[in-house]
Image (cartoon, rainbow, N blue to C red; front, side, top):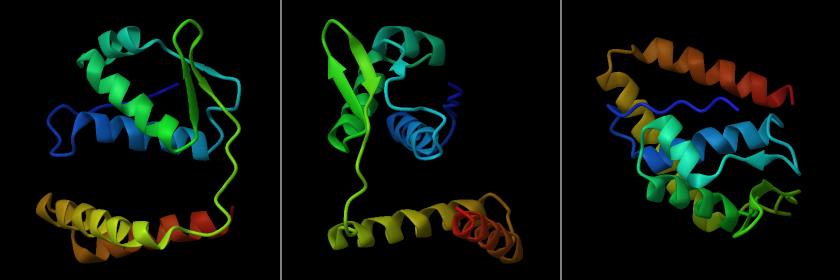
Length: 128
């Protein structure tokens, strides 16, 4: 499992962890039955507080991706995709996407580069 955290990023570390782990889960790099590192070990590996890792794991458990058990640790579980998108989440997704685009622009990316990257990602998503 490769999870990278940018301590200097304006995105909170737990959010980076949730987003990074979710990508690994959605792409099948983490499969049902896979054991995730214990909270304290992952925290030490990433150089973050253990509560940050615990919060990320809890968030993904609430989404149905992980099972957290006191003695057996954190395990990936089979997750059924929702039958239809939750409309209450759409505004939040749009807001986060706009924030990411603004962050890219603030980082010096041109609109053309951003559009090209978004198209590339959309085409990759269509190919799934």
